Image 1 (tube, rainbow, N blue to C red):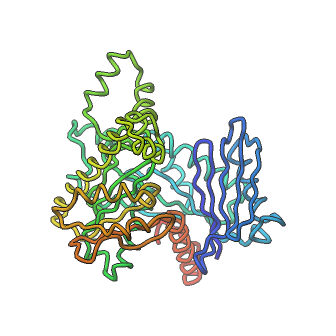
Image 2 (cartoon, rainbow, N blue to C red):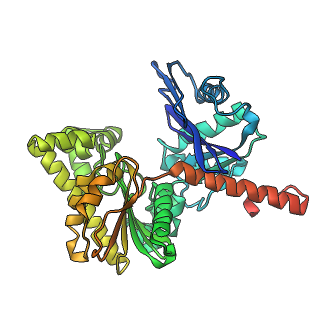
Image 3 (cartoon, one colour):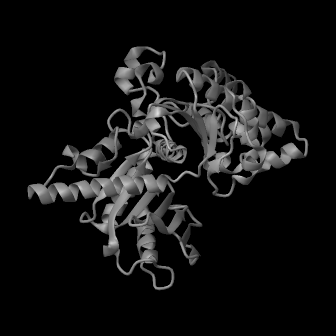
Length: 417
């Protein structure tokens, strides 16, 4: 079974084709600047063949046509016919309170995703565009499924997801903490339990997805009990260009002093804050270089980031009444050994001890334990694989559909599975 995994943005379309017999990636690529001048299409196979072109793409439909052509291309293709694609899995950021699991895509699911656009206009809108464009190119004969970033966090109790604002706003607009990066937290927590040779249900684990966008999740008994991102991905600790949590009065004060509109303030908090706002650099590699050169703002930015992450880990350990394991993943978590070391150095009172040699080696896609033999808390680095989670969920749904149809000899409503 070969599954095509799609991650659509407002002007981009990332994809991977995965062979589920081996769970190996056959090809991956990205369509960038869709609907914008200077579009690019990149495609790379597992054996190293590449296609990289500049091309105008007026819509996601045109982008999908480039994807399908590349997959069966004589030089860079990995399949002979599109009929070899068994199913398609889509990532959608916001499932709200409607969707708590991965689903087969039907009209009700599409309507549900559309209804959640106000909660995540920068994500759900483009992702829905991707689903509809995919249907236009592939037709409706190939089953399509959707995996929601928020669904893994749906186990949070009300005391964790509610905000202390008038309850009517929750009733009217469903304003609450939803959390994001759920597929990443789900993958690394499950894989870490495998590496520890323990059931996930027996572990108090904190997973740290640290990249340009970052979030932390507290996982107790196999279920998320809290996570740092809130109604939107802006909440939590500082990120590449996002502010993270701050005093709400900071927002209104700046708006009044600078005479800003809500959209202008939103741009400042999402695109001009975080590491960029403090140091002038959004890429942590640039921040690190400037820090080594003695730039005081870069030093401050890293001190702030380390301090905030350490606070989250400490508070989540208290919320779970104990801590067995910490996992680092995503761009910074997987590759910035100095950041991991600085964070864990602030957790000595928990009995966290890092092996510097192991920590320095665990970069560039390597996975494994970086804590010392006498550390009371295990610490792991695990490269995330959100696409594989989407592909696995899609395969499971499609297999159940086939099995149910075979057993019952009837058309089965996927929602009943």
